[in-house]
Image 1 (cartoon, helix red, strand yellow):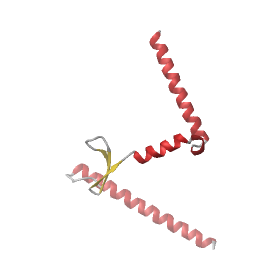
Image 2 (cartoon, helix red, strand yellow; image 1 turned 120 degrees about the vertical axis):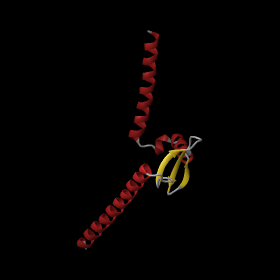
Image 3 (tube, helix red, strand yellow; image 1 turned 30 degrees about the vertical axis):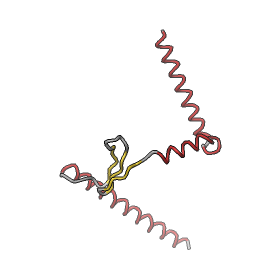
Image 4 (tube, helix red, strand yellow; image 1 turned 90 degrees about the vertical axis):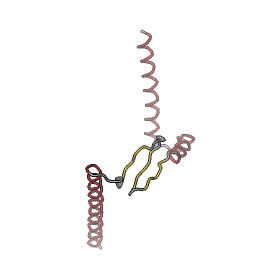
Amino acid sequence: MLNFNRRLFWGALLLTLLSFAWLTAFLVVDNTSSQFQNAAAPALAVERSQEGEWELSLLGERYPLSRDPYDQLEAVRQKYPLLLTPGPLLALEQLRAWVRVGAEQLYNLYLSS
């Protein structure tokens, strides 16, 4: 049984590496061809639209990327921070707030002197 699991692991790892190498080669060739030739659009690109919103271009199709789902999740996380945020991240948020306030106070002290 152990030998079967080992073969399954190595086979899955080999297939994953091959597919990753194929995808990387495809994107490198596409990027090179779009730089040195007049290609219509790259196969994969993330860029800003004229309105300032981010868009994902995938094989010539454009998909808008909205921050609304992230903002909704962040609003829920901020409503219940002790339940949804790990302790070290809460401590880092507090430390960041203290550093920001301290920096503002030092800057105001610098300006007043």
